[in-house]
Image (cartoon, rainbow over all chains, first blue to last red):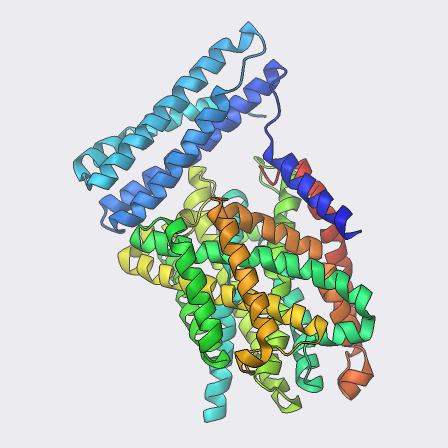
Length: 146
Length: 409
């Protein structure tokens, strides 16, 4: 009985860890929307952490950890969506728009991580101002999620 | 006067020791996604842990024996073994999550990669369990954990719209952006985080370590009835400050750095330093508690010598279990598995294992052979049975909901 229970739990964890295939246009739209929402979450985290740092409310090593963590997450979000294939030509445009927006977001977070590690407040301030337009772009894509 | 000081100290320790990595992560995550719409689950969970901690404290004080010791004697070795295996695995998983929490707190404070910190935390935990007196250990980390009160201060400093928060509390359903299965999944996770099995093992075994007798019942009850609800208030403040800060920005919490970010936003560097001390103390204290709980449950089941009241040389098997569990927990984290994911799974699997822990306690608490005239009254039994039904429902629903919602994704 205990073996069976252990097996059920192991299978459950495996099931929730796997990403399913993209078999229809609606699935791709949904994945595009969810990826965009996740990217917005990471960008907003970086924005809040950077503003907290610029206001001298945190120390650099803390901000570095938070921004690096978001950079890792952004990279995973971008990589996962990149690996999808649009099932038909109808979703090619959405796929490309989403891929480009995610790539821009990942690049910006990486640039901000570099600024944080260099303690470069001027660059960090400039980069923080670029977050809002990117969030708006991703939010439009985020509406594709059901 | 000395007695009142001891009582106050006990309550403060219970408050500071209530919150662990599961509470920190789950409450922040839920607050950021659902606002305060799941606050009722924390209240239900805290009431549940009060019901069963009171019973296990009473069992320890009156019988002078800890939970698993009696469970095996009362239910027999086979039934007790099922409980032991379930609780031990969940407590071991929780220990792994706590070790990760301590290491992440150090990383956030000093910028040292948490993987480099894990071996040191492991050695430090072993040294504390080996050398430091039980009372000093419990009180020290419990009191340092009180620094988590900065979450309450940060919430006040955030000057939130209290009526909006109140409206969320009184709306026990998912927001438009979330569905019911995800809401139910996180309700179970919060419930599991509040009622983690190790809390009762540690509470009852700790009572035996501190040589509680029937005279200490009042102290035990005060710790439970005051300390736990105030600890629950800390949990709610973590959710509330996450709701105020993250929900409007669409931020989903998936790491410990985000959990403490609102404190830095509203209270600056001093607040950040205090909250990191609090997180370190809370998670390190819980590391010790989960570690000891693993050793307690195994040693009590097999009838070995156990506890910090005995010289390590006299309870070598107990200490061998502690070292083995600690090494396995640390090695698991060193595979680079995400400590926050481990935490999320540990609270859900806690919910799965809850009946294995709490049913035996209810049975023993009704046995006059052990408790004499201090067996459960009708009210305690009504609450106990009601909670067991709730626990059973949560336990059965946890894994299907985990698969259905892809672990709340």
